[in-house]
Image 1 (cartoon, rainbow over the protein chains, first blue to last red):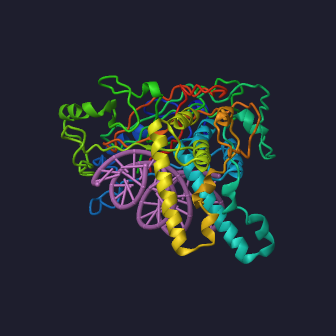
Image 2: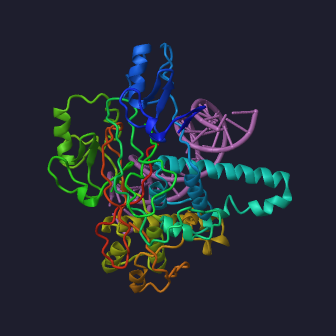
Image 3: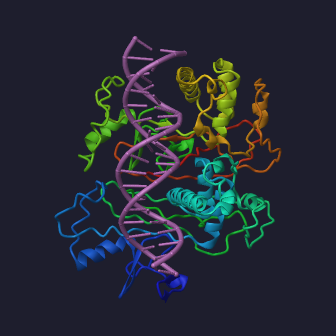
Length: 236
Length: 236
DNA sequence: AGCTAATAAGAAGTAATCAC
DNA sequence: GTGATTACTTCTTATTAGCT
C-alpha cells in the first residue's frame, strides 16, 4: 500500500491505535506518529484540538456551521479504483452506460465497490463522455461520427443482465483480461462474507468496513469470501 | 427487500419485535436495532427516549392513517422495477392493457412482483398513456399514432437475460418478442424478485443487514422464492 | 496541474396513495 | 376501476477536492 511516497507492506498497513489492518477505501490518516484508522481519527482530533463538530447527528451538511471556529474537516474519502475494477466498470459501461439496479448490484459484488461508488462512477463517466462528445462534435467532424453514438444511443444498447467473472470474460470486449483465466464454471458471485456497515443514528462518526482483501489477483474459485467490501461513506 | 442501501432476504424482513414478516406497502421503520413494524413503531418511540433527530414527523400529515393515531411514519415503499420486469410488463401491456386476474397472477410469478405492484403498475400505465394520447391528440396528429412510448423507455432496452422466459412465452401474449432471446442457458444470477426500497423514519438510522448469500440461481423454474431483490442504490 | 471521485442542486420519471 | 397527487429514485450538470 502506498500513501504518498510511503510504502507499506499490507500487513504493516495498520492503525496505530487499534492495530487493525486497514483496507482500501477506508478512511485513515497518516500522521507523523503513524497511521490511524477512521474511528481513531476523531479521538486524535479531540486530543489535539477540540473539534466543534460531532454534534449534528443531523448529517445535514455544512452551511450551518458558520461562525463557529472549526470548519469541520469534512475529509472526503476518495476511493481509488484499481485496474481490475476500472476494467470491469469500463466494460460494463461500454455495454450499457445505464445499468439498472440489478446490474449495479452485480457490479458491486464483482468489483467489491459499494453501490454508491458504482453509481457515482457511472454518472461521472456519462457526463464526461457527453462533454467529450460535444467538444468533439463542435471542434472536429471526423471524430464526431465515431463518438456520436455515445450520448443518446448508448441507452439503446443492450445490457448484460448478469455478471460473473466468467460471463464477464466471455464478453467480446478485448479489453478484458482477467489474468486468472478462470475456466472454471464456478459461479463467481458468492458474496459470502460480505460485511456491511452501518451507522448509528447518534453520530456522524464514519464507520468503517472491512473491505476484505486487496489482493490484486482475484479468487478463481467461488470462495469469494472476504472479497467484498466497499468504501462507503456516511450519508451527506 | 431493499431499504435504502440495505438488502434483506424476504424471510429476514421481519419486525424485530413481533417477528412478523413485513410485506410491501406496509408501514415500518428501520432503526439501528433493526426493523420494526408499524404497530410497534410507537412503542419503540415511547421507550426510546427522544431521538436526537426526528426531523420528519411533520413530513406527511397523512391524516387518517390506519386506525391508530400516530402515523408520521409514512414510509412509502417504492418498488424499483428492473429492466427485465419492466420489459415483461410492457409487453403484456401492449398485448392487453387490462389483464384479468389470471393474467396478473402469471405476471406475478414471472416478474416476482406482488399482485399489488402489478395492479398499480397497470393502473398508472393506463393513466399515463391516456394522458399522453390526449396531449398528443390536441397537439399533434401525425405523431400520435406511432408514438405511444415514453422516451425513458430507452433505458429498458437492455438485453440478455434468461429468467424463465419460457414461462413467459407460455402466456398467450402473441406479441411477445424478446429481441435478445438469448437461448443460452448461461447462469443468470438473476435474482429478480421484488425489489423494494423505502425510507426509514429516522433518516440517520441505518441498520445492519445481512445480505446473506446471493447465490446465483439458475432460473429454470418459476420458483421465485429465495430470490432477492435487486435495486439497490445508496442513499443520496 | 490534470484527472476524476465525491457532493449537491434541480429536474424528470414514476410507484404508491388518495379521493372518488 | 380512474384521475390527481405525493413521495421516492435516478438522472444531469456543475462544483469541490484528493491523488498522482
